[in-house]
Image: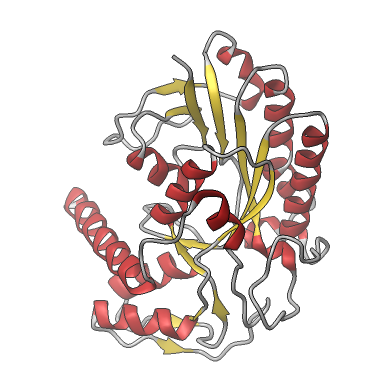
Length: 300
């Protein structure tokens, strides 16, 4: 029986996708969380892909990469080493395998900082030279383009601001705000004015699985299709935590208003997000609160 395999199952979105899809097989050097029962194939390095030679594979989901902008933007090579080279090695290997689909992620940040005044769609110009992180995602898309030209069936997902419960220390707005609200007396946020497209991780995982059942190849946006301000997020977390989150009114980079056009993914799969922002944040907060209590108990 052929399998769908997932690289990056110990990461944030990989963890969610495995929990929701027990038949997906994890591949990598780090096993998923102990409570995840999916089959796992131990592979110490992306250079050891030959370990999969005898595994019948239908689809490949590739989540290996690094989205820590602060780290990558201060390095000449880390973006390439994390976000480009592993993808190139994987595609080079799987081009010789008879697989149905290869799915990988880049970023809606490729669309740049200029406001469009409308939802951003896949035909909009990209701006790859903003910083090291975005440049690495651009190079990843060039690698994808090369293997698409060679006839591989690849879906390159430009993903929006994804959020959800995590035990990983990620430099993302939602988990950082929630962690601070749970652990600090006076949590703060840089600025409440930016408006972004926030998509809940379980919704994103569902969309990815649906995309694999289509004949589509190429670039597709994945977001919620709705725009909410950081202030909206803050207000909901304040209600959940009972704490006031102070805005420092510091300058922030990036486009101030961004929303993703998700009409293509909807046309391809019929998918739309199941959760509102409030529902997703409520579930995220409850899980992170429980996880924090469990960690505190372990330390007693």
